[in-house]
Image (cartoon, rainbow, N blue to C red):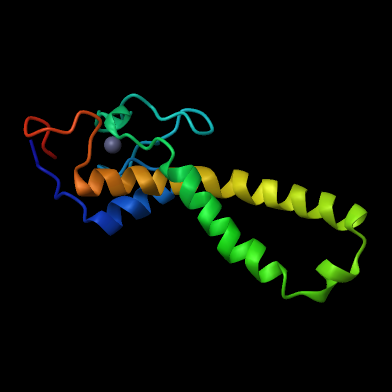
Length: 129
Ligand SMILES: [Zn+2]
């Protein structure tokens, strides 16, 4: 049996960002929108052991807030257009942005946890393989 080289932290994050298994890049991380598969369909790696918790939501809010909401205030159209028109447009587009970014951030976050060897039951017995 050939042993594949373990990916670096950035490689694991890039694989997760694309929705792929951080260990092999072949299988998918998610079975549904944000539901992490119990194990990789390609290599059998236990994907459910990474405690993503609120991290992906936090980083998604951080990204959307700093990269989209902050710069929006520099455009005068935001202030000159009626709030009755601008609020629904902004809320709809920001909701769509969050829904698009969140699974990618969660995948990258799981890749980060994989790369750093952080697992649900982190102990000396559960070292990265
Ligand atoms: Zn895999």
